[in-house]
Length: 138
Image (cartoon, rainbow, N blue to C red; front, top):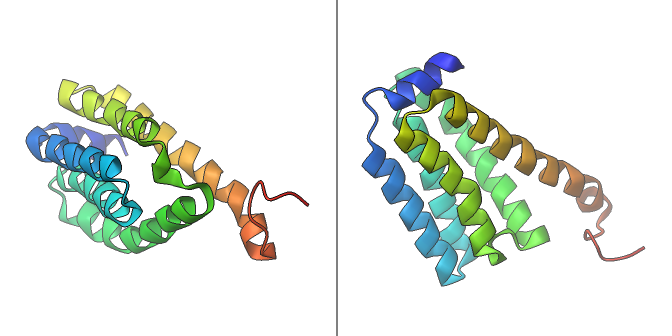
């Protein structure tokens, strides 16, 4: 995966990644979770597009639908976008690493973001399958 991060930083368009982040931040401030989900997806898409790789674009396309479902689950079950500052901060560290051209930090921040949020969804799944809402008591 190192080549993908290197490609993101070479010939990358930081303004489009920054612009996607600013649009995410605006959507978060609006309080509209559907707009936040769309902006979140656009942010991730801008990162992928920055690699200028048809293969990566092709691999990301089916992931996009899955990611949309995953974000909808987080939004519905945990009100994911209610804490706009937390969500923005989680994405801003990625933008900072990207803009700094720091491949190792970018890889680490993206891996942490994916792992942390994956763990949050995994923790929700048993409750979703049983019909219980997390934190709703026994």
